[in-house]
Amino acid sequence: MIKLLIKLFIKDYDKVYDKEVREAYGVLSGILGIVCNLLLFILKLSIGIIINSIAIISDAVNNLSDLGSSVVAIFGAKLSNRPPDDEHPHGHGRYEYIASLVVSFLIFGAGMETFKVSIKKIVNPEEIKFNFIIMGILFLTVLIKLWMFSYNRYIGKKISSSINKANAQDSLNDVIATTAIILGIVLSKYTTLPIDGILGLIISIVIIYSGFSIAKTSVSLLLGKAANPELVRRIKELILENEHIKGVHDLIIHDYGPNKIMASVHAEVSKDADIVHIHDEIDRIERKIERELDIYIVIHMDPIEEK
Image (cartoon, rainbow, N blue to C red; front, side, top):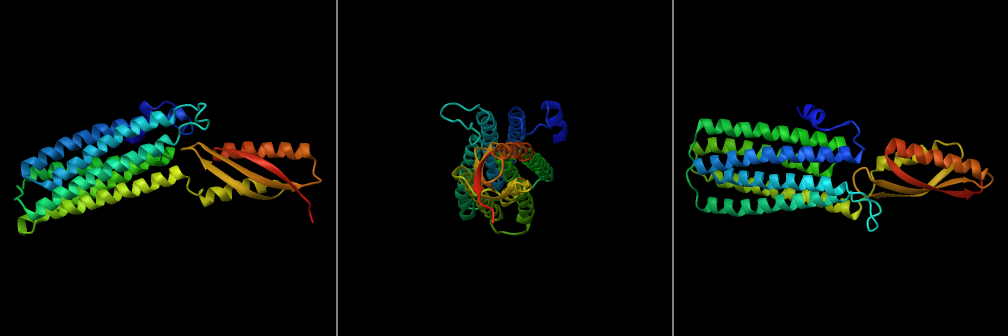
């Protein structure tokens, strides 16, 4: 279904390296997230109040934070697509990483609130009202979240978006949480243990951990994490496959946001080689790397004496 929506609403959807197309993907996923999470929040909050379940109400609050995450995703897509300016000559791509960090804070906050309320429910448990129709509606919400996990993961891979990958993981956490709630409500009919409060506590811990993990990844990207070893290997491979390049060193890769990567490297060439010919060869290598890897690279020639 997500592929159909992409074809309907995103022009030139296959050109994922185009900044306008990337923005369109981000906006589409954000709008879908707002619609789905608003529906889930209303359904779960209503059910939680009807059957007096803190676990379900907590799950509803988590969906409300997910709605906020979707709004942030739209703003992140718009802001990261702003063109370079005097103060930011390499563009604003890292806004997407900042948006992911904001999402993690929202998730973490929802988890802490759920944790506090769940503790109260364990200390002062209340009876849960069982209803098969309501259980069916809860199962429907699981299917909706599974679809959200699927489309966020697809878009995250398609456009290499950290915020979509974060939302995909959060959606999967919601699937696990709601499934556990359904099982817990069924079990509560056969035990006097405060199952509802215990489940709410477990869900809150999962939510808090998810928020922490997303924040850790986002901060790592903002600080400038080490380049993917496979990417480093491929860059060197493309340079060394040329007959006049004897070696490479001092490869530096800068990540300014998704599909906004710059690099520099020193290429060793014979001091006796024709400098004009080598310069032309270096230009061809740079263009090839940009074409195949979508990386703007500057290659510096280092003359060496061959043995």
